[in-house]
Amino acid sequence: MGRVVVEVMPKPEILDPQGKAVNGALPRLGYTGITQVRQGKRFEITVDGPVTDEVLAQVRSAAETLLSNPVIEDVVKVEADDTADATDTETA
Image: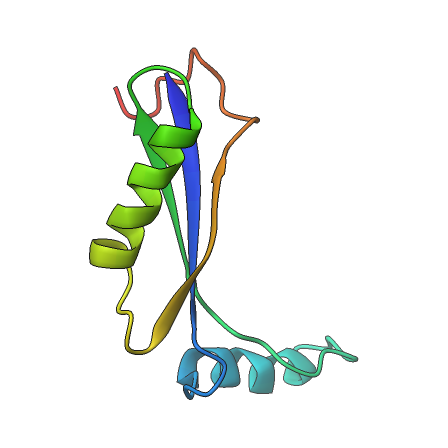
């Protein structure tokens, strides 16, 4: 089994209230020097068999159709997760 990681982020021109709230809280918690935070979504998709170029294309299509709102979000990453352990039983 393989795993694909998909990351979706708000488009740059879209306001990100969650990122703004986190950015405002960081200095109050003692974290300085951070100038901007943007919050997105990460999906980990387990596939049957190895992660091929065809599988990545299929997952990208699904991400652009279902996992993201193309009006306000960009799919910024679709890649094989090389750290996935074949014996991972987290979803079992």
